[in-house]
Every structure is written in C-alpha cells, then in structure tokens.
Image (cartoon, rainbow, N blue to C red):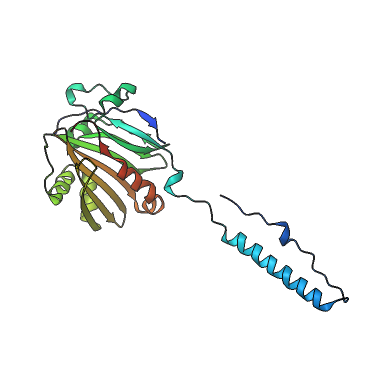
Length: 243
C-alpha cells in the first residue's frame, strides 16, 4: 500500500490587428471625353490600387490563439509524507522546500486531494480547467525508488493504480515513449498516449529516492484546440533542489 502524502503549493506569476478599409478604396469613378487615353490610364491605376488595398486586407494575419498569449503560474509542490500532512493550501515558505514545480494556466482551479487519493495512487497535486474539468494536470509520487525501471514497466505500473490511464492505454491509437535528460543529466521518461476520445502526456523521473509522475490529460476536442498550451504544461515539469 502506498504511503499517504500531502500537497502544498504557492503560486508565483511567471512570466491583432484588424485592417480597416483605407481611403484609397473609396473611389469616385467617372470619366470625361477630353482625353480618352488619360482616362483609361487613370481608371487602370485606380483599379490596381483598389486590388492592392483589397489584397492587404485579405492577407492581414488573423489574431493568434497560440500558447504565447497564455499566462501561467508556477506551482511549488513539496511531496510531503503522511507524517507531515497538515491539510491543504500553503504559504510562501513552501517555495523553499519544494521538490518539484510545474506551470498552471491562469484561471485553472486546484482540486483538493483527498487522503484516499494519496493512499491509493500517491496523488500530490491536481489542477483542472473549470470550463472542462476533464482537461487537467496532476502529479503523483511514490517513495522508495532510487532509479527508473524500463519504460514499458514504469507505464504499466502507473496504470495499475489509475483506472482512467488503464482505459486510455487499452483503447489508444498509439503509445509513444522517449527517454530524455535535462542539463544536469537527470533522466525523464516521456510518454504520449493518443486515443480517439482523449490524449495524455506523461513525464516520469526519480529524485530524492522518490518516483514523480506528472500527467497532462485532455479530451480529444480540447487537445486539438489547446495542444500548444498543454504541451507547455507537460514540458514545464521538473524536480528541484538536491537529488
């Protein structure tokens, strides 16, 4: 049975043009019989100018909905043991004792983690999109792991205590895994599970004699719409402090 753990967190702020019709497109088109050649040239010039103005309007870049416009907060998690469990919330001193960090989109809500969740799969923190609660990120940890097992074995063991993850893997169109190292040489396993109904990004690593697993999950429609932002959340996870 997994040890009961507690969450703690504080947040720290992290750090289109609409083309309007130009006056040149407002033309008074009339001719005189004084100089047919001049009139034809003027008419051609006006027509060309109007075409250029229209092209500028049509080619104007629309407003961007990319990840760069999304503000984030940094979540500081301490992965405290059951003996240090003291409820929910936190204060600025938690930043000094944080064991891991990840970004949370501004406006997402924190879900209070129950002792049952901590006891069954080691969930330490969780946040969700209030407009679509199944679009979320969370972290689990387990004590007593000095290093990572083979990639397939790690993913299967995580699924043992996560029914939703089991279902996603069993119905997935593809499951990709990769091993990465950060600047200090710490190893991270990265998984991407693509299913017809949902998408999941998982990052797993070992530090401080613990195994940390960070999950970013979204239904398929939200994944298609928010994938740049969701990838940012996935890539923001890391452990901090001495290993």
